[in-house]
Image (cartoon, rainbow, N blue to C red; front, top):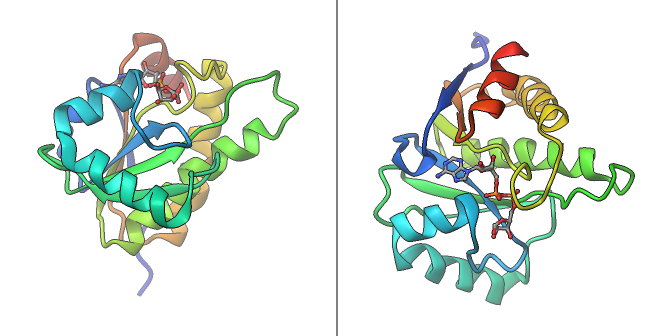
Length: 173
Ligand code: AR6
């Protein structure tokens, strides 16, 4: 029996408060924490997340843009944090759209591999990394819709928008 693909929800809020099985972090390649949502996740989740990131980097090196890795969520309500590295926007001709799409796709595949049923995303690359918000919103939704049929056990994907602008863009789409 084939399952219907999971649902997509769009919310405004703080992803650190989201009780999904996995929450996604918009990390940097070093996985060593930073500002924005990355800083918020490490601060709220505690040192266990950074310790797990250090182990991963020691074993496999820095995480390239578009790839994803999974760690404990420490003290957060989620079970896991999936760290993915968005592209830095530099005009759109350096593979940024493909890399951004890979972030959403690889995070969903990794969540499914770890038996997650619910996953929450921030608006990857739209902060410090400067990706134009309308284009990023389009790629996020299109990629999630394309990937959901490949991960039938994922029941719900939540886009957690910190900014009203991203919330409105996603709602329109
Ligand atoms: N919950 C949900 N979304 C949030 C939260 C939160 N608590 N805080 C911020 N956002 P950014 P990037 C939104 O800059 O552009 C870091 O320093 C924010 O409004 O966090 O991928 C990393 O270490 C924006 O829409 O990530 C990297 O060096 C979105 O999250 C670099 O920034 C992404 O903004 C990554 O840059």
